[in-house]
Image (tube, rainbow, N blue to C red):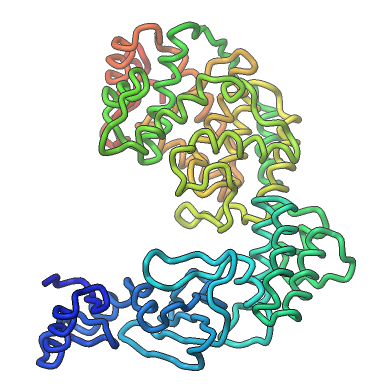
Length: 491
């Protein structure tokens, strides 16, 4: 018998189900609730086990129920261990289990847009239903109305006005079944205010007010971009012409993709990565990682991604969405082409909030046009995309692709940031993010522009050998120094 799994009588033949009852009666098993058993274990472990299997347990306690209200808004089980389900006939009850409290309220069963949760027997409220159910009298059943507004702002930022209009139409269709006519009116008011169609819509959040005013911009970030732009306007930077043509261009794109993915955690031996890119040999047990390498390579070698940064202004995010969708098209879990809906972090650094992504990129990309073309503007693009971090995943790779597109557009050598130098590059970016000091960031990319231009990319075997000799593939700056192609060292 498994020692770390719940046992569900309904999934077993009747004889085996009766055996579970007998074992529970003599203390060999723990009866979690009717039809659900667990091996004997410490209470904390049992609570954790039940919590991990909350969907199937809820399906036993409330078959046909729908995860709703605040639980649907917050992703299921709350930190308190509570989960709220709606059911049309079995309601006004609370079932307390180890690690889980199932609260059942009155509400319709599955409606159009609700999502089945596997074979558990319960559904998860669709987005529009969830928004309607969280509007109403305050209490522990509903999330704060500010959360509803913030979710709508995130949807608008990610998917545009049509998505909010679709929610408004869906809400009108769902509200009779939910008895939510009053909630429908408030939802319409919020959406109308966000879209600027209702002059008296009452918005509560800073993000919502910014959207309604047409200026959803992270002012702290735009001020930081101006600091960087001012440095780049004043500091003379090298102009390193590109002499990479023909097959050498493919080899360069391979090395660029290899390092750009490696520092983000997609780690292959360089010879294995070479097979993926140059021979289209997908590693059987790592198909998605293989496609990550290919994704960056495709963008680094193919126009317009290779040589045309996204258009400045409101279209800048749309351009990045297209790049992101192409780069990560084999990773649906990364939401390719869709801006983030939740704020993201790197350590203690909090990136731009979702509601401010579109406006901040529009403002920041316009500012890029005030920076001299070539290496200076490429450095600016690298920081702009990285600092906003507009997607759930792939932001670092995307920032380097945008940087290199500007370099190729102006006939300059593209930049490669090797594994050994990446920690220093990140430290320089952090100094700009946290201390508004752009000098190290600018110098680090200028140094990598010079470094990457030294190699002969025409022969891949010789290129890999030379790269190994420079320590570029090493991971520890404490043990190794990054050398130039000729073996010399530049501090």
